[in-house]
Amino acid sequence: MLSVCVPIYNEEESIPVLYEKVREVLCRLNQEWEIILINDGSIDGSATILDRLAQKDSRVKVVHFRRNYGQTAAMMAGIDYANGDVIIPIDADLQNDPEDIPKLLAKLDEGYDICSGWRKNRKDNGLRRNLPSQIANWIISKISGVQLHDYGCSLKAYKKDVIKEIKLYGEMHRFIPIYASWYGAKVTEIPVTHYPRKYGQSKYGLERVVKVILDLAVVKFLDRYAQKPMYIFGGAGMLSLLLSGLAAVWALYLKFFENTTFVQTPLPLMFVFTALTGVICLLMGLLAELIMRTYHESQKKDVYLVKETRNIKPDSHGYSDPVDRSS
Ligand code: UDP
Ligand code: MG
Image (cartoon, rainbow, N blue to C red):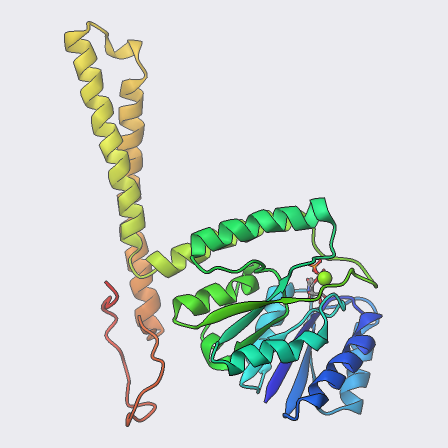
């Protein structure tokens, strides 16, 4: 079964057109399907239009949010409510072309777990949207090690089992392929068609690039260090203490061999600041380790993800010892 998920915030003109197009494409596929429309607190006529669609067609599922939570939350709800084993998010604004859905599915049939759309000919404002996004995409692929041209493209296809464990915050829906790939999913991309926005207006501006980069830092941190926060805090702390030692030695050398007193250089100041920073970092690392243990142990979270098992009953696993087995 296919689940197409559409986040909607004030898209009243687009919804009926989108529904018709998606329905037409899905009916051609000879598979069961559903469309999940998430109304992210729209304040135009979107809600009524959605309810009317749901009344007409039982394959249309509608989730109304109480207020506007943002596209990522809407996406998360789409994934949570989806019954399909393949999930396809698509924007409501008709900038993506539903005709690309079969091409994405063909890639999943080839054995990939995720196929991302790549808006090769992107039809948004060049300077304000495309350029910053190209730079962001480049940084993201460098830092994440997952090679994609266009993380921000909503139109993607996911096999449900590789993303059901993933929790999304902030602007993080674009990082799903990265998370999944870190957990062993096979990721690929294909170029998709992109159209200029016809109705309504974009909900975003330049400020999103900053959020995306900050989210990337969080994602990277959570993946690489969440189980061993001491490595990152402790690493920074040790570096700081090293600088502190160097400053001290240098200051003493200047005093005794070059006749430069302590007050003539900034070195003693550096010594004090870096020593303090170092100690604080190490203590924060210990705190973070405590928090991490509370997190894993209180929620019985495993430090690993199992792909599948043989001859093991689903809940014979029970409580897992939260020792770090990854390092
Ligand atoms: N959207 C949403 N909640 C928000 C902002 C946007 O559900 O708070 C939806 C919006 O209705 C659209 C999709 O997310 O279906 C992408 O938004 P937009 O087209 O504004 O982004 P852009 O294509 O300009 O990056
Ligand atoms: Mg758009």
